[in-house]
Image 1 (cartoon, rainbow, N blue to C red):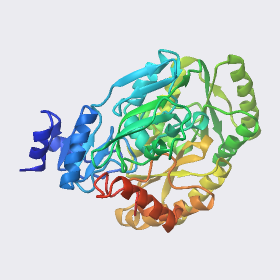
Image 2 (cartoon, one colour; image 1 turned 180 degrees about the horizontal axis):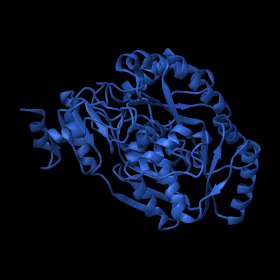
Image 3 (cartoon, rainbow, N blue to C red; image 1 turned 90 degrees about the vertical axis):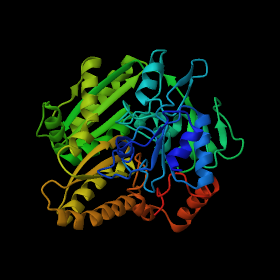
Image 4 (cartoon, rainbow, N blue to C red; image 1 turned 120 degrees about the horizontal axis):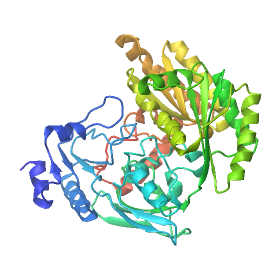
Length: 458
């Protein structure tokens, strides 16, 4: 009997998919043009069904690749060894919004923006906001420890996960944490699942911390004549005592590609770089004071102007514009996106070094991202380069960029994860002893190595 046939014996009708369209769709994510078709796709609707799948896979030693919405950028959801793709998208209930304890209990398939919209209706706030928040899921965010622009002020996903229910490779169900803000009962197993990229277990329920929603905000965009001046301004804003909600940097060629992609432009198209800054607060006068300080810093570094978005509609327009950067870049050329992160003060050094490395290899780079927390997405674009030279130059350029990032006290992923596409570079930033320790953790959770195999480790 086929693998699909065996699964259909233990699962309800409609949950097991084998049609060619499904295998193609679930064999890829947003990582460049990689495709690995699975043998079968399963879409459980509850924890019991996830348990059945994992018990079967454990007994038969079949690889299982967990998947959220497939919006990842490091190949974490690619079924590189075939087998089963287990999609949690149908497990999409918001179980509870607890306004007394300021927590939400959700299933992994809940779309991030859906949760944000629901909690805002009762005056609460779930800050993590990946660029794909309108389509990515909480389960995928937990697997990758997703960030986004607001990580600058509010932190990344790990700061909001108080508890998890998860199914292990064996099919056993474990629960760690809960609605507690203090819990040192043994190891912090909850956080071990956050950022584990689906290699330790499949999260089937999460308890998430919420905070009161800040009702006042200002969004501004600041053009600079020089890219390094924009990068330097980021540190200056913090030194002035201001902590923005978000502080994004986009270099000129990224802005131009967004304008072409969206058929809409900014007032200063020739600026070498723009900062997109958002302030939020529970008090409007605080925003006014912070805005004045930001203006002083930026003007001292040659900013051409300070443009403030008027009202929620204009603010949303600016953020929709920013969130389209990735799509705009990839729509014009073959590309390779790297997720570099350094201490914030080293940001000008990172950008300068990336440009020098790219010039030596004769390639083009487009830099944008979360400048406020030192996390810059370096997009290496093929443009008109011939195939032979692209394939010859790309690996060396990427490795050199990562080694340079490490020399600045940085690392090779701030929020995209290692997954499949970055695993060869892990030894640049992790020693043999450190990798061996991580492998030992993986083996303790999944001794047969069936859960999301082929990821993270070189």
